[in-house]
Length: 456
Image 1: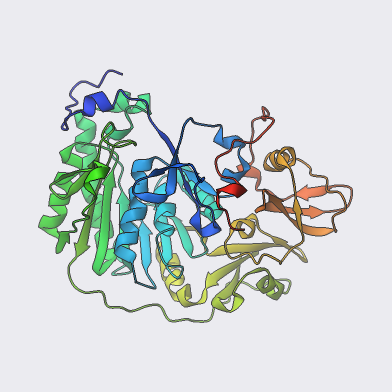
Image 2: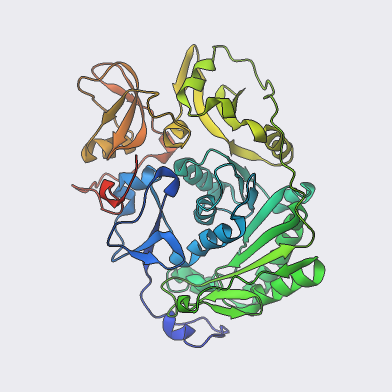
């Protein structure tokens, strides 16, 4: 690889590290009871992350589509460690991931938050926002909201979030060895352009952070202009201080002026820089009070049966919007309304069902959610060929299964719903998520298995 003209290696050994072969790593979904394989090489800063010896064809692994793991560079998993560090022994937290797509850092943060936390994930680019929505639905954490749009909207939300994460758009130097396009597009002018935009994003979202809250700033680039200079800008313009993360020396992370650099060759991962700052003042300790759900629309059918499909139904309010039945945490309804009045919301809570005429059809989001009650539907375990047919949205035939809505399982975990009609079953997998490739392998890649410690 030839480095672009004008690029300066600011760290010893960086040029050599960029010539090394990239690593492959995944992070298990602890919320669904998945843990790494017993003999896995763990990511030092993330107990649920581990390295693979080679990159399998993830598309053809049902476990990935079931949200049992996320393919993520090891360096980016540091967000799990940071959130765990600052969220310890706290409850009713709210977290914003302001530049969230495709969702890796959001899901890493989710796994380190208490179960009563609420997470808002935002993305500016519409196509990427849809990918973010899909990935968060598959991850299954029920207390989420996905929005789309410019971060300037968050300037209207004063002191809402306890933690704000901003993995800001950058010049992409940390992706040089993985993405040739990153090398082609890099220029000193791009660095300056990104630095200006990064400051704008900080200015937009800073008001939404509560006093005493934590701001996690990160980029996938090396230069000081987009990292240390931006952190200095924050310190000079806002009441805050840098938080010393005190990473162990054996992690080989470089600290420079309040920024922590993950350098290829020094760490087994791609380039990343992260800084943690604490806003001045003390947290006010307030939380949203439980309120009754508003009547958004009148359902043509009784949707109360949907409460039988979810675990802990008394903790959730059901609302109906555009013929979709949505479960919202009862103690966050007021917050969701406030967010919905300000943001362009793509998804919130858990979509439990869709109303079609007089019928109530369970949503795929419910199948993926941690909110699904395990005995709510009849289940049928299917093999790998049948699982791939389902994910391609082909017709499924079930032997000796009852009629009605059936939850398909693969390797003991929910895969999705079908409506069994007897001779055939209607496939309810989302049309726009289906696998398009017709070249299906004979067996699934082994990334996580029931022998990995999965508790289902």
